Image (tube, rainbow over all chains, first blue to last red; front, top):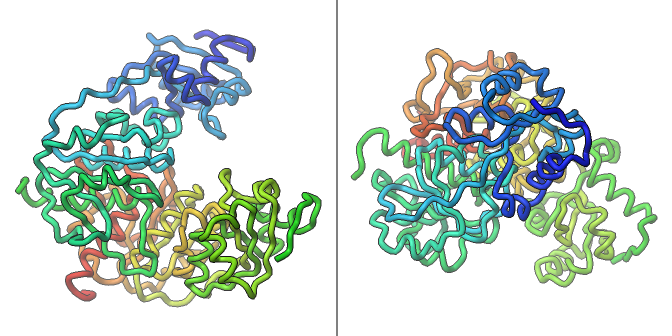
Length: 264
Length: 264
């Protein structure tokens, strides 16, 4: 394991760039996994790591030491706590980072199973949480429009809690083109004419779920692709949900319906 | 409307303290609502406002100008954009703030309807999102343990999107004491012995839902109060959900079950 104690070391500058700059991540073609949970999730999914980075405080924790042993064939960097804090993408440094390559967008194909379309979701926490929910619900493909946050930024990865490694994430997608020949339902949430209560819809077959940004909702272009509107009944006085909560309710209503019988 | 142009003005210092310091909020006994949506939600709920604060950029927007007209009997402060940014609790100032009194915790009583218990939820975004979800689901009472974030901080209020004004939020609650004589089910999520799939549980009667912090889960003390464990089935390779997503799924499964019939 190589130890670094100077802030002027090129490795420190490189890691700091990956932590703080979307442009650096794109030009280097790499990103950072922050924290033992995320690094472990990547290893469990056989995701290729480039480099492991640990701090003194990290090394003192058994879960980080276990990762160091597990990654013994990997390039390893050891930073002082102060340097680690400098390159950490979070306020409370976790003591362990891994460098991975930014994956290329998975190839687009003709989709025939359920999938999730996110349009203009810019909040990193929301985006990561929804990816985590989609992975837990057993979805395979997530399509992001150009207006979404960078799916592989450290903050989105952190909120995703490993969900990234179980999904095919397609970024900068022209959704209209991709869904043109989609054979299943294409559903958006909202109160449009003909909206049906989500619990009354048959969701056992394939569904392309469309969710838009907090506040603004779907862009007109993506909204036009919906072949049906669903509404989540809200008995309370508050009449809207966070997009992550709405997605969780819809995707797991589909999980519920699919438990008892196969696709319609 | 009073205009302020100097950062040394005591009103600016007071607002900056409310925006940035939990201690200031407690000692002054006030907090800030940030953004037109939240101020409108408070007005719609007849929540008493103390003061309206607007910026030049805010005043130029019709939704803020409408709030100024609607609050004509209220003390109003006008700040330059630079000063407003200084007192705004968010990075992208919204152009309108309202000052409200920190509400006293609602009195504890013998609860007989469904309610939500949050134990040690410290992330402001998660806490606010869950309050919004609870309000949308029609819950009335939310009990927070001492380990939770301050429910009325500007960041939690912002994520709550008005949910606060439809709930009775009880902070620093000794949950064991309060739930001692609760007549309904007391359910925690998790994989403990005897856990049942949430979709197979009869949730039509009153339920006290227990949710813990991301990662750590429930404290031993609160976990011991559960009279049943429920599990959300996850077909995917990721086996955990964000606490806000889990709460949304459980609370809206109860909404779904209650739609078709009254309490069991």
